[in-house]
Image (tube, rainbow, N blue to C red; front, side, top):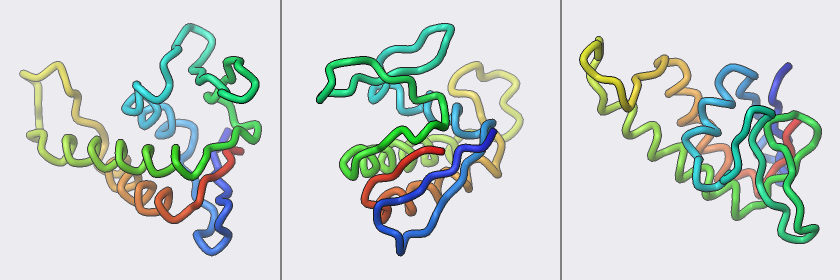
Length: 121
């Protein structure tokens, strides 16, 4: 299961994070997605006034504003991760993640700012 992002601004090109790194990034966006339970992560659709599951890849739409917020959150997460020491056996939180994920999240931030919003497939 991939998580491919298709931007509204076609010049930005498609972007993919994948099923293993996307949930890590979603967790760092905690305040954007306030409801987490055993069945997935949800956010409120303001127009329909209902909760929508975003942990799936079924065409969920991210607005341009939310894409910019996600980019900012991703950059903050990357900055924290890059500041953590290697071999952090003594640390429990924040946990250092894989370097390739950190690099990918930085690229996602650049992409999300240019995307104009996107859909998740």
